[in-house]
Length: 260
Image (tube, rainbow, N blue to C red; front, top):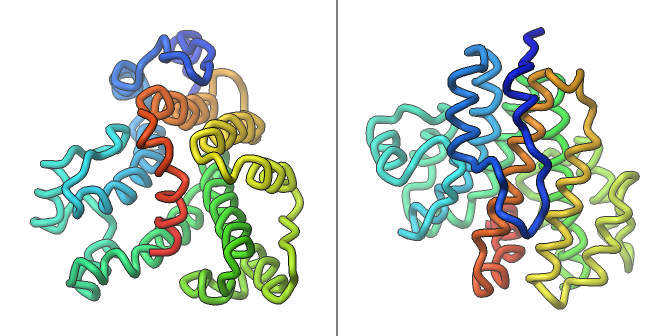
């Protein structure tokens, strides 16, 4: 396993609400200069998830999250030439040609991303992807219960035999949703702040940063530390860039990623 003494020693602490001392563009350049090709690919997987989510605003001609691998022009070129994205993205685009279909069935694309990348990854990256998938599904379930929506319909694009999905579906007729172990505090956050989207986003971002830090790592100078910082940096930097209007919509957008 590679040790990144120079890069890891440069990483300052991150504080939500304060512009990071080590901005993303600078961190990205240092990763390109210092990481092995294999480890650099792991950072590109995390950023690839953002590329996938950026397809929505790309189709809507809206601003993209700048933390992906590609900008607007690069996405346009890759989609035209059918390169730069996994094959399942182009399969999705051929199956759902109309714009309204792309939005409606967008959860299919996200579900496929997690299925493919979790299976291929290992170590911290695998744990991170599992966490990202699980907390979103738990949030989706809690929101569905609040608004009396059918859990089976909400999770129609997920594997009903998968453990977390099966746990959620087992509660489809229950009056209240009890989150699985490890996500009890997520329910507390959602219950307390769901009426204030901006505050809810703040609490969620802080909660996610702490949870990501608690994922197992193989040492201070390992690629795990670099990946952890990358995931936390994206959260911290996105919060600083939010204006009030964007903040009011961000949690709704997270849910739309799942619902279509």
